[in-house]
Length: 62
Figure 1 (cartoon, one colour):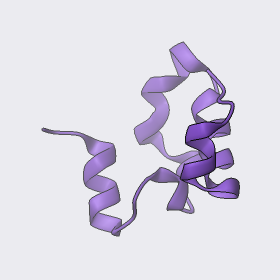
Figure 2 (tube, rainbow, N blue to C red):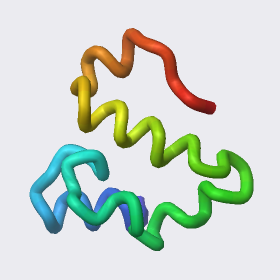
Figure 3 (cartoon, rainbow, N blue to C red):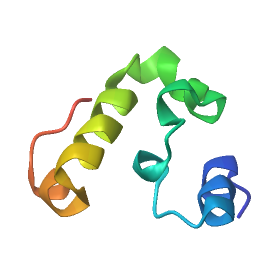
């Protein structure tokens, strides 16, 4: 399937946006803002800080 975010991660050889230095200013994530405001950025920061495994089992911002 076509997904700009997935293709970007594959191109950069990273697991997800949290591994990218540009995720906080990435325009590919802008479509989330109208619904989630900045929750997606907060979640990505949290994943970057504590790791994906702890994030999956912990509190999320939605």
